Image (cartoon, rainbow, N blue to C red):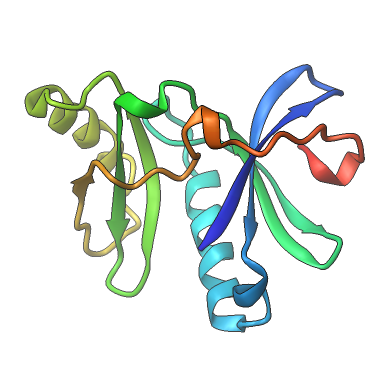
Length: 149
């Protein structure tokens, strides 16, 4: 759905991930609405089990959101929850690939935070990588205030 870049928030001195909706999808209002719903769902929750959203906006005609940058990409699984119409990416697990018991317990903690979702369907997807492996990152220096939180 989007391309993810690692950037530096110079004002707050932190590394962030900026997810930019792909150009082909940016004009599709349904995809844009899904992108917005995902960011809103994640930003409404605060937990170490959920990727923190710092900001959402538009820059140079592209919609984007800024979130916690996650390290340890090769040893990670992701979690999505589904409310019947949209799947929201909400959790990133570090060091748990191959440890199903620990992964399920970690995911359960994230699911406990989602009482607003009528139906929750969670799954471990070892191939889902919202922030590309470090070697594949496109480096950006976030200089403009609109480009970071």
